[in-house]
Each structure stands twice: as C-alpha cells, then as structure tokens.
Length: 348
Image (cartoon, rainbow, N blue to C red; front, side, top):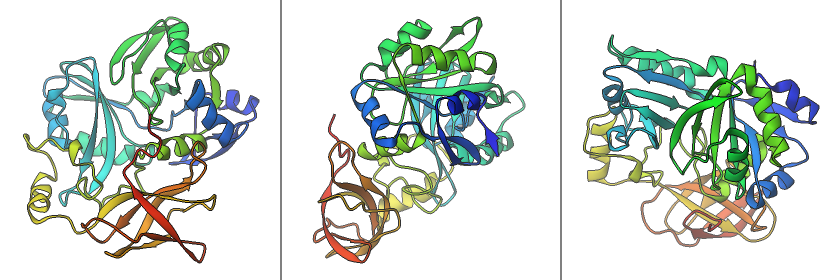
C-alpha cells in the first residue's frame, strides 16, 4: 500500500487512517462532524496526495487532451482549469478529471487515485512522439485547503491567492509549487502541490495559519452536500454523462473517445437517470439501498446524513427518464418517503 510522504505528521496529530485507492490516508482526526464544520465555517486542509497527477507537455499536448477527454481544453486559456471526463467507446465514464492548463502546451491531468494508472497508460498509448508525459505524483505532496477563510490562509503561507479554477506556478521555501483554485467541497480554496522536501513544512505552515487538519471522511460528506459525484458510486464505466445529469461537461464540437455513443444516446434518449433526494430524520440512506417510485425502481449511489442540514440526503439511479413521483428508499427494511430535489443540497 502506498503512503503519503507526510504520514508521520498526520500520525502525530492523532489521525486515523484508511485505504483510499490503495493509499493509506487520514480518514479523520478529531471527528468527521467537527472537521466538516471547520470547512464550512473557516478552513480545513486535506492531504490528497493519493489523487492522480501527471504532466502532458510539448507539441501535440493540446490535441491529445482534446481527443482523450469529452470537454474541450482548447476553450480554456492558459492559467485556468477545467472539469472533464475520460469516456470509453460506449460513452461510459472511465474517470472524471480536472485538467490544469499552465501554458499553451503544458498541462497537469488529475484523475482519481483509483484510476490514475489506467488513465496514464491511456494517454501514453495515444501520445505522439512530440508529447512528453511526466509523473509529478511520484515526487510531490498535494494538499487541498478549503473553506470561507481558506484563501486568506493560503495567501499568508504561499503569497498567492488563486482565483476559482485558476492555476499558477511558484515556489515555497525555494522548492517548486503548483496551485489550482479547485476543490471538492463547494467552498473557496485551492489544491497545492509541492515537492516532498517541503511537504511537511507546507502542512505545518497551514496549521500555523489556523487551518484545521481534516480527513477524507469529512471530504466525502462535504462533496455529498454539494451533490458532487464520486467515481465508483455515482459514476462508472457503465454510466454516461447524460445519465448522470452532467451533459454540460460534454463539448460536442470536437472529436473525442465515446462521442459517437453519446450522440446516439442524445438522439434516442436516456432510459435511466441520476436524481437527488432528501429524507426526513436521521436514519441515513446508504449506498446500495433500494429505491422505488411511481415511474420505476433503482438504487442509492451515494447517501448520508447532511451534517449541516441534519437530515438524509442522497443520489440514486432510477430506471426512468420521466419526472419522478412517489419516491421511497428502503432504509434497513423500512420503506421511507423521500423528496426529489435538485442538488446541491446545501445552497451556497
């Protein structure tokens, strides 16, 4: 199992660890609820070094990314980031991905940690001889800083205040630094990569600026409140962006892997869809629970109790493209009424 380069620092703070995509990563420190609140109310930091990141550079880099991913990176200027997806020939989501564009032909591609090897190999197989693909994950730590006061802390520590979906390069204590105004919580902030040599120093400097250490348990409840999909639950190889309600991620004006299948589905119509729902009370609707409605049946893809709202929230796939009425969730043997809502569940 892989370990983050700053694991000892997390252990000294009392972190509990768990397996995330083959990496031994902090699940929580003081507790998921307190860490969730820290991000919603002030600022929290997550070690997300398990996430994939590889560089794509040189003549042809832009063409390669355009061909491999369904959004169009050519519509994004240098200094910006883009949310996109790698699809298979059937239009299924092999991974959802963030791309950081630093220059005309210089990018970082950030897949999910569980999929990085497959996505990296996919790019290597399709790359022309003029394109160089590097693996900065091998020598960097990646820290996400999120929350209403996150940008103040980031500016104090690294002297930069990244805008939303803006990217930049710099230095920290004489070592290279890469930063993107991206995240997975719905709050302002950034994801910061630095070399292993200064990873501990960056983490400690953020703590010194008042940022609370947070584990990946809180990161999951935070993303769910915003209705952000999780690959492997809300997205997978059998699910298309259209079924997931993420058609806005697809730019139809260029050729990419899976485009023909998506065009057919767009013309024929979808036969299932991802919906958001809420339940009353504090019995959590969990991943894998059955759902039923007047229009069809399905299964919960993600669900939990919202720490902020205090009741159940979730997403589920229903075998119907119609408007859903009479929705119920089987919560541990009891069919429980649910209300269909459009995420985000927490309105910012």
